[in-house]
Amino acid sequence: MPALTRAHVQPDGVTDLRDGFLIREIGRGVFMLTNGNYQSVFLTTGEGVVLVDAPEPLVRHLPAAVAEVTDEPITTVVYSHGHSDHIGGTHLLADPTLEIIAEARIAEFIATKNDPRRPRPTRSFKDRMTLRKGSRTIEFVRDGFHSADGDLLVYLPEEKVLIGIDLIAPGWVPLLDFDITENMFNYISAFDRVLAYDFDVFISGHTADVAHRADVELTKRYTLDVYETVKRTHDELNIHELLDEDRDNEQAGIKKIIETVTGRATADVQSRWLDGPMKGVDLWTESHCRAMVLYVRWTD
Image (cartoon, rainbow, N blue to C red; front, side):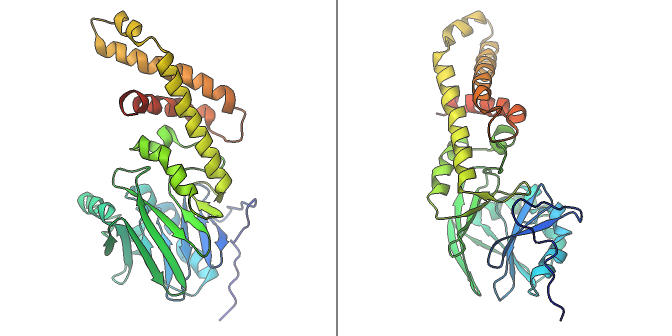
């Protein structure tokens, strides 16, 4: 059999996407596959390849990517959460022998969707599980920083790789509304839970880049700055005065509170971060401040 070429395996700092994808080796036999936007992770075990997430834009590259680094077949797919953009290509891997693993409430969510793009898991667990397959130990822990059905933190303790999809995006502030998180309290507190792990590499699900501990710490600082700025701005506002301006229409007054705090907090945060180390401040900070106003006013 000819030697594996690894033509698409590229180190950090090199991004050649002329063939539509690249591979980064993030640990011995552990690879991140990306098309420049989405990411998935696959790893050899000696007993078949385990794949974490199957975004449809990546699945068409998956056979070539796997064949480039190993002769092992894909035997297991892990769902990080239920959103179709990250697992909606799983149907293209359909095989009666394919094992699909998900946390129990994610599995229930998938079942209710009855979406042929997202096949139902063949194996589920409650809250946490350790998978030992061949040479690998993989730890799964349920979290809830992003989606209502739940999110998995996937940890490779020997390789010091941690996967938490849609918590951050290396080099960028989070996407709209803190990556459309459905639980702001869990999102804010997730950074400490993530940073409690011993990891060198963090896989976020997006961009062509691998993240590291410093990227998680940076996004935590940004998120806490948004929270503290919004809370301070809201607490300094004369709420009664704004409501009195629309005393015959309370909802108009509430709308004015949201818009006023959002506008002032956005300008304040952008004054510190617009020329800072992360892109997207001009695109998404206003949405972050607005989402945080809703949390601060009604949940915090």
